[in-house]
Every structure is written in C-alpha cells, then in structure tokens.
Image (cartoon, rainbow, N blue to C red):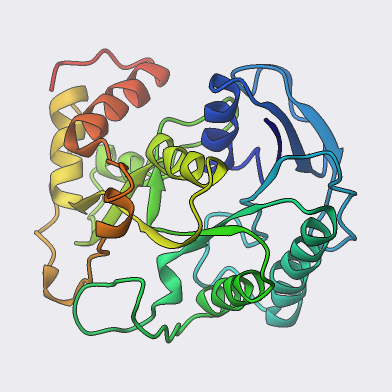
Amino acid sequence: MRLAVTGGTGLVGRFIVNEALRAGDRVTVLIRSVPVPGFFAGEVAHLAYDLNAEPPDLSGFDALVHAAFDHLPGRYRGGEGDDPAGFLARNLDGSRRLFDQAARAGVPVVFLSSRAVYGPQDGPLDEGMSCRPDTLYGQAKLAAEQALMGSGQPALVLRATGVYGAPGPGQRHKWADLFDDFAAGQPIAPRIGSEVHGDDLAAAVRLGLDGLRGVYNVSDLLLDRRDLLAMWARITGAGGTLPERADPSGFRVMRTDRLAARGWRGGGIDRLQATLRDIAAQAGIASRGR
C-alpha cells in the first residue's frame, strides 16, 4: 500500500508510521521538514506540507492518514493560546483543504479525532450521542469530522483518548514532567484519565486502511495518577509521595464496543507496564521488575 501520513513525526504519528512500515507499506510523510535519519523503523519518503498551505497532489496514494494538528507544545485543550482564529485557520481550514485534495485524488482517509468532541456528557461516551464540545480543540476536531463524513468519500474517524508510549529519538514521553516532579518530591495533583497505547491506536488505523468506515472510539485503560506513579516507583525505585486517589465519579469513560466488534483489542495493563520498563531503559534506569 502507498500511504500518505500527515503529522508523522509527532508523538502519535510515529506509531502510525512505524506500524505501516512493519506491514510493508510504502510510506510518505507529509511534514514541513525532512525527518531525521533513524527516527522511524525504516525508510520513508517526504513531501513538504504545512496545514497553512495548499496540500500536495495525493494522486497515486492508496490512502491518507491525517494525524497532523497544530497547537502550543504539550497542549491540545487550550492549544490555541491567544490566537484562536489562527488555530482554526490552520487546523480546521487546513484539514478541509486536505480532505478536498484527497477527494479529488479518490483517496480514502483515516482521520485522527479526539474524545474532546464529546464535551460534557452524562454517562459513558458512545459514538451515537450528540456531541457538544466545550473547547476550541474539540470544536475544531468535530467540525473537521463533519466535513470529512459529509463529503461522501470513504473515511474512518477515530476518536482517540490520551495516547501514551515510549518516545522516539529526540522526543519526551507524555509523562516526563510528571515523573520528574515525582522524583523531585513535588506535590502531585490527583487526576484520572483514559489512555491508549500508540501501537493500539495504530492497529485501529490499520482497520481503516483495510476498509473499515465510520466513526469509532479508541480507548483502553482508565488510569489514576496514583496507580501510574506507584508502578513507576516499583519499576525504577523512584521516590516521592503518591498523590491522593482521584474521584472517578465525574470522569466519563469511552465505550469501545463498536471497535472491539471489529476485532480490536487494547494492550491493557501489561502493555502499560512493559512501556514503563521501556521508558526506564531509555532513560538509563535499571528496571526492578513489575
């Protein structure tokens, strides 16, 4: 398969590209600059692309995975900073132009959306409920979803939760600051959230490349910071005071029944523990076990 991927050098996009390379796809990354040698698990081609600009010609590709999103570093919600108009112009208008280009080329699309499209809800989050996003990030993702699904072109939308995994060369993993604060004895605020490993998200993308269409949630673990840091402490011997357990009553889990019915499964706690050991090894910390 000849695959075009936007955002391939991001924390999430790298998992998608590496899965495609393992599957034998010929991958072209659509990013501003040529990727650093060795960043991916194999060789990729490159096309210069910026969400602000007109997309390149997508003729000749078998599918497009759109994972690019322009935001302040480390921030999705609130990632617009003090430039909401520019944020929308880049992410929503840029996505629409990309989808139009894919339609002209007859290329199916897999779009990486977010649980943020749901906004405040009562009960578990499922794909059939009405969305009411309360952040500009969620609003931009939802509007891009609607533009894509209303175009009539073959498409899969993946509403992903938080994505974790060992970082690539030159990257910091999503919990790096949290682990640093924990080791330094800083107070940690209680928090609970849902997570999915980047490889499991890439497996969901593969279902789209194989013909799955529609809108699907992608989530795996409900993870309390207390439990995460306790695992990290067992694996690394890191000190620090564990935060109080967060109140889970206000957190809405994502239902993934529809995706599971298509054969998808998350890696669960075993994959999380293996990833923490990988992160420790990359940091030069000898693992002490599970």
